[in-house]
Image (cartoon, rainbow, N blue to C red; front, side, top):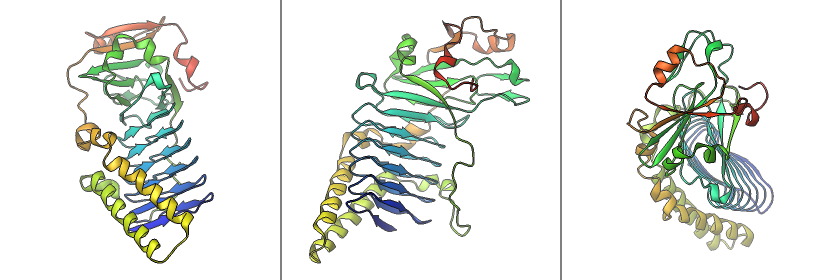
Length: 334
């Protein structure tokens, strides 16, 4: 396992094809974990932290950071500042931390991310990554099906499961987002929509890193993904590196940066956010078939085909103004 460090300045660091621990330290850093199970921390200032492929643990740290999980089942922390935290492909666990954060959830037609601490009072907003269904000859979603995409109107589906709120839409195979602890918002959907955006999902080729054919694909081995152990390993590695640096009388700025990274890491190994995230499998593998109140949000004047009406039977329908969804989505997406 490689330990890759930044400097007090602005750094660009890329990991190996194997599990890495990457620490940006000071400066506005760009950190890329490539294709394995990585622990990456931006530390201070405004950083770009990209997990790439594999199940990763990512921290933005202090500052206004861009934290992107990429492929794989990731655990992401924005920490302090106004962060943009994007799960990417895979069912990810996301914490924005303090500050006005943007949670980007979904990233595919069947890809529910869990938002741990979405908070409208702090100014948080969330966006659903949407793959347009137009151009398909047929369409089959988790709760709607039709023989022609031309028959698909766009609308949202909300479902309260216990204290949580699932968010999906008519272009998706299942729910796109799980908002932890916000189940009551199903009774006030306009309040929820006031903090929502719809954005286009990235194409399948947005990852441009070559994968070594000799390296096993970590996505096929999710059962071995133990975020608590990854954190403890990273903590032990950092402590050893700090002790070695002190023994050699190393650079004080580098030592200060490593100690700050260690403080940040220990804040999560001992902190409430990580405790709330356990056990990981219970959060990621939610059951959308559990009973709960369901509400469809549909634009006025939308023609709902009989086959859709049958599938929506027993749910509440909340009508919004014509063109409502298009008003906060890019032109041509919906």
